[in-house]
Amino acid sequence: MKTNYRIRKVVIASNNYIYTLGIKTILSVIGIKPELFDVESIDELKELLKEQALPLFLILNEDILNNNVEQTISEIKKISPDCPLILLKNSQTSIKANIKCINHNENQSEILKKLTNFFKEKNQKDSKKNQPILSDREKDVLKEVALGLANKEIADKLFISINTVITHRKNITEKLGIKTIAGLTVYAMLNNYIDPEKGNL
Image 1 (cartoon, rainbow, N blue to C red):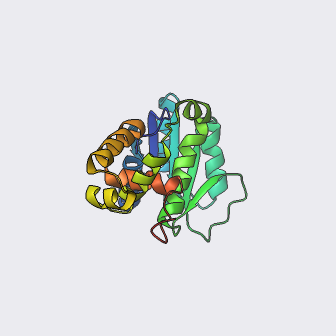
Image 2: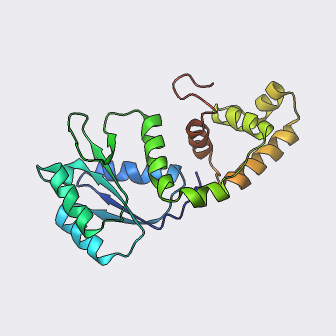
């Protein structure tokens, strides 16, 4: 899904290939296509933060942290205090500091919401100015697309022509900048047009 946020650089810090690949896939789905940096150790991360100019967004997996999670994060923040950071952690790990976190065992909807909000908050003013507005009918069509209906099925259900459905889908794609059904589905979930648990609202 295309965002309206100015996301230029994202650092994924993890020594677990599966986590790194998963985060990259999620970023692609929610439409964030920045310059990506992969690091596999704290030392490598610290060096990168010293070299790179802001804006950077840091997605930090607990697996590369030392035993003292909060102390290590504090060291990172000293190097780059304005770098937004979100921590991927086990649910058993207790964090006292005010740090944005995603637990490894959270469901798809929660992870998508937290990551989207993580990027959104830094650019809240810009995103509000550029927020695409869908008409009520476009929202209806988007919901049915996200639920997996074909154009003819949508037309029959909403009592409109197939050509009208195609026009609405084109307008939705242009407004949101989302070309894939997967991206539209994520957008619909994040904006509460469908319930990922029940399949609809």
